[in-house]
Length: 286
Image (cartoon, rainbow, N blue to C red; front, top):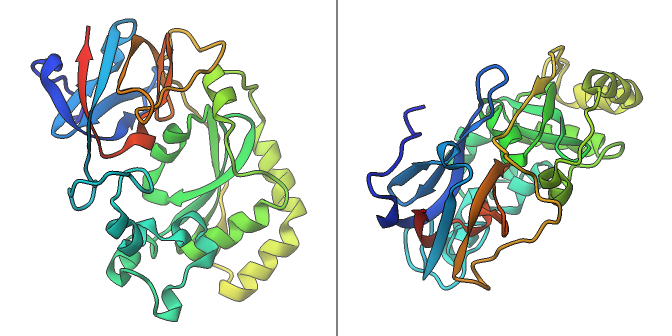
């Protein structure tokens, strides 16, 4: 956890926000959170209960090229990068629409590095049962980013396109969205993910057989793993969820009551820091 360290003078911390770094805790310990602002890293768990102030300076910088932009696209990019980067293409959100084989990938080398590697289709419980996909190397980070309290990998495939096709099949029976308000309120009942997996695999067997016939028997592999439980550092979950927004309020402050997903939970409201990637902020712990 070398990325988890406090800045020497938090009142001077300033830089463009990136999504928080999250490392799972050991055993029953909650996940460890790091706020990232430019070159500064601020370990947040040790400041639970303290006052936090974040002030947007009015500047926004693209997380890829660094140029100033009046508006952030796709959670942290300027418009030219949003239109040219493969990581901002619609196929990232809808991988079943991958167009690499048509010769129209925006950045073939990027696609080969990120999309042509094993992906996992999983079930998670963040606000109820959902299906999702991610690169195998992104587990369990993906689950922590979503605020999942339980997760279970169910299928491994060779590439992102295949994961999208499997996910599309599963979305006939289960959703792929998180109700972020319910997730933050911690109003989520535990699920038997193994039973849900077995139920879905049985009901979707014909569709999976068709995908194996298309891509090969070994390309889509059913997994037999145990569910994972995830914990978060939360002193008190909000009873009513009020969302803070830098586009409406430049200075946001309150007592830090918890951290879940990519959200700061303050006693004055919650804030999705990932939404404001590239926004230059000054951070103070009081």
